[in-house]
Image 1 (tube, one colour):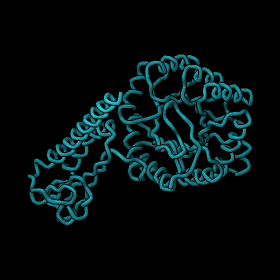
Image 2 (cartoon, one colour):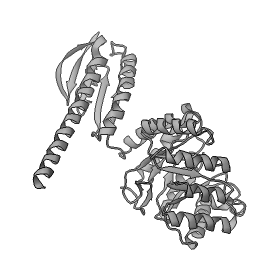
Image 3 (cartoon, helix red, strand yellow):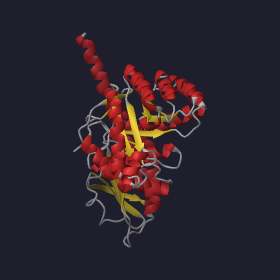
Image 4 (cartoon, rainbow, N blue to C red):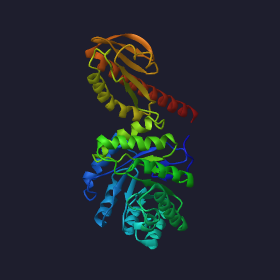
Length: 379
């Protein structure tokens, strides 16, 4: 069961209060290079990102943020450190949310300037604390960064912002230590009902970062914690989006796209299942974005190495292949419909999924046409 939280709006996207968990990422271009930043934003959006965070380190970047805002409709978060004036400028430029750490934004006067601007524009502020930004007195109290210290810092800063009249707040308490990260969010979830942005910060390159993020974020989501999610990888941020989506799918927080399963193979397998599965997964990746744009429900595809793990074990798959020696059986919803040569397996699966996608689109158009016809008759 999802943790109950308040709702805030980031542009037109609801966060918290039972709204679907949204996927967030952050550009790594030089913000002052507006064209490069816009290009990456479009790539992120095409991949399925729903909120994009942009760093605003100086006044030139703040001016560029204003130009970027004019050329994209995706919700934008301005990431600010040290200079509250940049946060105020980004808010005036049209930021849908700002991310600050009140402890390093410029004292109470600076925090007040940011909260006043955010309240006037009716946008939320994310108070983001990580294990490297805990206040010195809290660090001294606990001896080193820890879950309790992260939470104490977040709640202290929340009270400061609340005192200044702002209640549209999102909280995060990230650590690169997965266990510390998990414990901090559990503690924070118990002590506040503000929506939570979750992530494992500085998780590393894809080879390790995907594992750390999957463990850390998956555990939180299965515990019902998390209203927005970011997978932080040392890589092109576009690579973060499919990972985040898979984490959401496999924790029951995403009802759409393609659920692709394949067996690990054993000595019974008589086909090159690895090559077949890789090709099918790659080709389905392009179709999945079409499905998501159309709002299609999830489609499950199974590629199995033999009859043992075929239609029986994968009977809930919409489409599947159970391989044999140079050929396999194609099954739909657990029912075998015929044999397929090994060379044609990928084509068969991909064509079936594409046909279903096209059929869904046609049905949508028919429903839309019928709705318009009925509305016309009513008028």
